[in-house]
Image 1 (cartoon, rainbow over the protein chains, first blue to last red):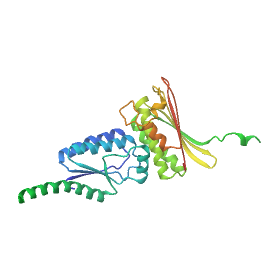
Image 2: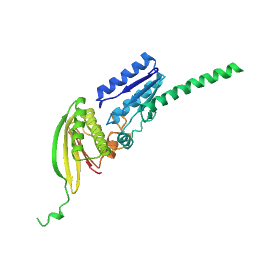
Image 3: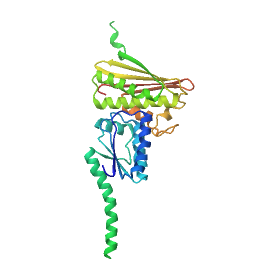
Length: 126
Length: 146
């Protein structure tokens, strides 16, 4: 996956596991220098406020480690429940599936890169 | 018998199950049990997800504030409607001000304070009784089509 970390959550996590995932992921971002984290939750049937907070934490922690997080594959029923519960997952980028998530991550990181290139180019032409 | 029609309709309990929850590893099996009952009465996926999420929030509250307690899962029927009733009973410190605890954003712990009001929005009926120093009982009902 090059500069991206791909995480697929395959079971309903209990608290300790979710906290471990949070810690492991941040460690991995630092270790691998990944610029993006993609979390696939397509088989997760329940996201309660605790799990929502973990996802938000991962996104925020990765952000300050210079990596973008995209959550993909949320089940429609989970989305409905999250909003009614009052947990809109602010600050977390989402995409419909892994492919679209990858595209979004690539775009996000490219935009940063292009901006740098542009400034460099204008400087060199002047 | 002839005055039967005057009685208020109280739900009939068709089936019930008790589960103790005293550690966080009990949460997922409890949720699975709730799912099993909800599936059995033919509850749709969205309502099922709402019910299980509500159950998860309540059971987590019970663990966090009261070190766990007892849960009761019941299949109930009222008229033509079937539903699931969940009762959470703990012997924790109790809630001094229920009105305040039911407000969005209020928390005594480190949480976001979404637990009780958020949970109430996910279910059809919500009832909470608490005695300070004795414990708290929360009862929720989710109707199959509600």
